[in-house]
Each structure stands twice: as structure tokens, then as C-alpha cells.
Image (cartoon, rainbow, N blue to C red; front, side, top):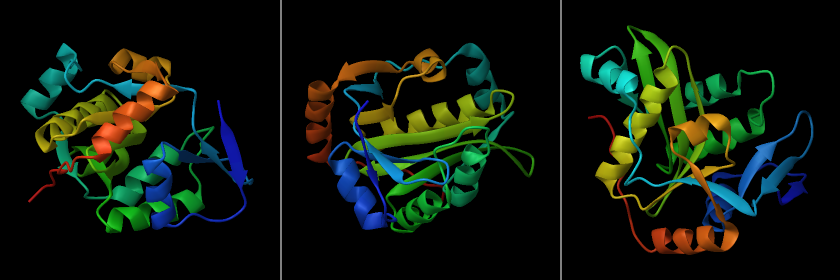
Length: 199
């Protein structure tokens, strides 16, 4: 892990500049924001991600209603609502500002009028940087796969997942080294993808 602490708040412009360099922020508890650039990077291959049968059935039968960019800040706050989190008010403010500029997006899963799952991330060029996900009763996986469908539709070339964990590995994430990630990122930034949004 490679991380550098900063002692100032981040703007939406700062976030874009950092992500273009393969850097992402994480907040400590009541401490400085740390800028991370891992030597081993977790990514997804959009061409090979496969949906498990249960999630496919849920999406096919309408168990979860999917929306896009309907409640970005709420998705962030729900992602932060856990015992250990790297999301604080400084990051919520910065990413919400980036969302208003059209470069951060959320995909939400609903049961009736209840938000039960969601995922959010940053979009630059043809790269999408997945930030965090929450969900109950398979709703998080439904939001993830709904996002994947939209990234494919929009022509994205890179889907970053930052650090690997058991959950993202089960979804299809794998690790690559920094040099390979930088090559993929440079290539993705040469192109423009379109993030599909609800009408």
C-alpha cells in the first residue's frame, strides 16, 4: 500500500486530478485524508463479469427496481454507515460536488419506496472508478450488476475496484500491478464513454 496524508479538504477539481493519476482518497477517523496509490490494484474485466443466477433472477423478475443518479448523496451515506469506514463528511461533500458536475454517479436498488442497495463511483473518460457499495438481501449485487450493464452500454474500458477483498473477488475482481493498471488507465483516458442515466 502507498498512501500520503494531506491536511486540507478536497474539491471536485482535486478529485478529477487525483483519479487521472490513479490516486484515490480515503478518510481516517478524525484524522487527515490519505491519498492511496496501491502497488497491486483490483480491477474488473467488463467483458467477462458474469451475473450469478440469483441476482439475474432478481433483476429479471423485478424484485429490485433500479435507478441511476436518483439519490447519490444518500448512497454515499449508506455506504459510510458501517463500523469501519473511509468515508467522512469531507469526502461526501467533495464527491457530491463532483456528482453535480456529472462525473460521479450512483446506481440504486429499491424495494417499493425503500432504498435497499446502491453503488457509486467516479467517471473520467472511459474509466469508471468504483468507490463503495451497500446492500441487503442481494440488493448490493443487483446494483453492482446493473452498473456493469450500464458501463458496457456506455463504452467503458476500465472498471477500477481499488483494493481487492473477498466480496469483490467473488464478483470477479482480480489484481494487477501498478504498471499494468497505469497502462490501462492511460488507454481509457484517451476515450470518452457515456454514462447512461434514467430519462
